[in-house]
Image (cartoon, rainbow, N blue to C red):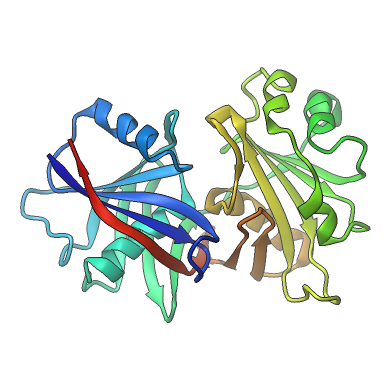
Length: 288
């Protein structure tokens, strides 16, 4: 059996930065257990599987496809960067002729469209609520030690904890912070938190001006110590920072070692458009 596979770096226009995802094009149904085996073999934070929904569908002409995402350990309900990568494979490699693609996923229907040199994802927007420090104190200590926390929020829909560091800190502090995400597993065993976002307000002046906020994202509960650039985390960050900054259009930067940039636009229908660029770095076939 042969399955076309691609590696796409998302939220960047430079190879070997941004967030890599593997994308598999499924001409036929795949045995259920093979999805996980392939994702484990690819060993990237996510492997996306695009499937045809009807027998006559075509990767070049159809506008609606099924989409699933797997980490090396398990299936996940939402992955922004692998959706961007999947759309890129259809638009750029398959030369899909539609202006908008619709993906049927575990998080409902997600749409992707091309706008100039960006691909725009239409994602759910997740609200955050104030979180009592006592309940997550051990986890925060494991993450940031004695750093000053300015705000603490929780997103029940995504089980993500948002930790805002004090505005007094510079971006370099967030970038250089040594985080041992493996320790999070013993600090948080209740199942309440499945992802931890560290975030910092952007700096209007200085050498990195232009970004409204910065972040880093950790999900060891999903076998992912640190994710380079995370669309789903920005579905949470967007609602928080829009409220804090009074803005609907924002530019965000995720401060991982690879780094990536996201253009954010809150929509009037309670969802969020997150746009990024891509670089295709590998084209091949899985053979088994």
